[in-house]
Length: 162
Image (cartoon, rainbow, N blue to C red):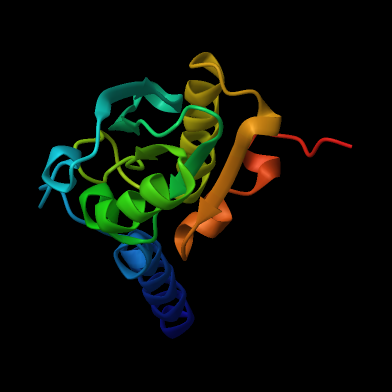
């Protein structure tokens, strides 16, 4: 009986430890920015968005031609400053406005990354684009790695037009 109880207790402790460590195997945020939009000749406005749980998301609205907006959902490592070269190419070649915002726990955004939070952050970024004059039919979604999941239409509140 004692052996079974010890095994059960040990298993429970192991499961709790793995649950707490799970995020460290998935998310690799970097807090400090290595560059800013101006370093790449990009015109940008700072964004501060409210997401669920009182989390504040930080990022940039990078101005292009103003016809279409791209919501850029980055991967699981680094932060938005590491995507500026790609954003420069998108703005210069396609004229897209780009909403480049860090998830909770990345860059200057508050909170800790988690799956449900990423979906809420995607919705907050989508709302920000809509509030700035971009209806769903003028929004392009782009996700890399982890961002491909958080950018899904179902979770961002953007519905495909028919």
